[in-house]
Image 1 (tube, rainbow, N blue to C red):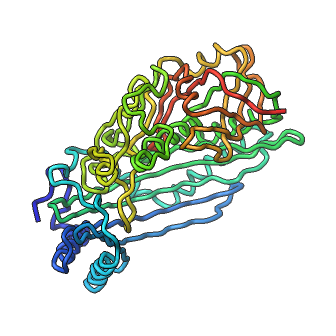
Image 2: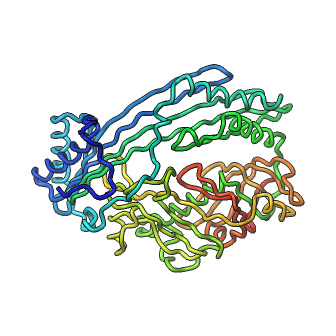
Image 3: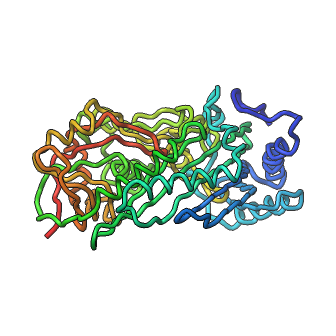
Length: 465
């Protein structure tokens, strides 16, 4: 087996229990080759999660769980088999190998099956800030207290906050190990923590809920529980006494939290297998104008500290920055090695998998590049329009681009957020929506691995009365 790639962190002999997992992955690969596999790859994953939930100022539940398992994928020529196990003993690994071999024996050949080429394998050098010890060291009492403080800040923000669906503080610590028969062996650790609350506001017969949360790989980077609670309360209060407007065509503004959903749809549309199957409205559009000239969409798995960052993908290919749409022109799809072979292209380092089965296609940090106008400036320029704060339902067809979803938010009147709106639909077509994306806000912020700033689409149908 070739030495691990430069830049991959391997734990030293002082931590034999953790180093054992990297050795286990390599051993599973070697056992598979000895049993007749022509190629093999092994993923080992372990994680510890914790959730403290409170409701109406009382502790409701504590949940703590850990997991550790391995998955093996093997090839015998162009036939593939995979299996996984949580039994990491010598006998468990032997059964893992045997099961994958047996499955490969009875599967059909796939001419596009295979591992990445050796020259495509590798890892990003340097510290990607995926793991923070300040998350691992948090005491249970502190986690409970933070959740209680966030809910308390919401409940005490206004007399109209009369109830709560609770608050929670979550942490997750994980380790990912990957090795294959073409010389790659690597691993990385990651941490995550989040705090959120969901207050309920009431004014007469009108009752509304909303939420706010904060998340980071570092505990020290979280917003304060008081800020989280007050923000959630403000968002719930502004939804009170909502009305249904008349059906009309108007400019529609998506706040960042819902603008992310548009990026979700773009991500689905540039998925390599959707392109291959012609199940995307962006099939056969490479090099063509598919969005307004101010639209640049990037997939970047290399940005330190973010949720979609990793040193390598789930095939051992280095993560990278891929410009998907540049100034409105479709420049790239998202591909793993399998989809790349199908399309006669090269992998973009976007392989994503669980423990069993073939690698799928995922994203790194997938985002719309920010513009220059503030959200306030965008709203101020609209005499009559709809500011969307929540989307409901799943009425999106990626094949045709047809778009229709339930929505709630605030009505824009003379450049101001005038009153709450609910029980309406917004409808259009993703092709037209991307071409009609007139303004992009300056408020890009990563609260997940998909991010977008405030966006304004020139015209959509708002269906109400």
